[in-house]
Image 1: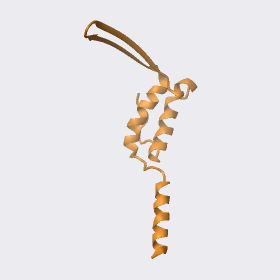
Image 2: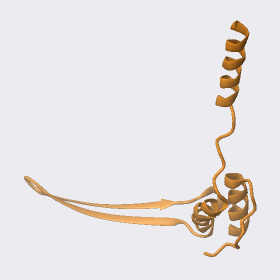
Image 3: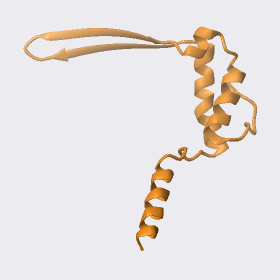
Length: 98
């Protein structure tokens, strides 16, 4: 009986170390299309806000997100395929459409 509990504990410990599950290739392609898009151009966000209380407050914010793939000059097709394989374990079934 003690041997069974040791085996069960060992199996549970090993399952906790396993790689997280892969997603479907279709879902991976959808997620990786956005990552490939970020490799082509930076993402720019602009926000404007007005608040009213005891006094009027205004604010402006600008954000620029640069992906490492954009900075390295990695081709978007390469980013897309590498990402899909990493997430699904399979090659994309459709080419990249930006």
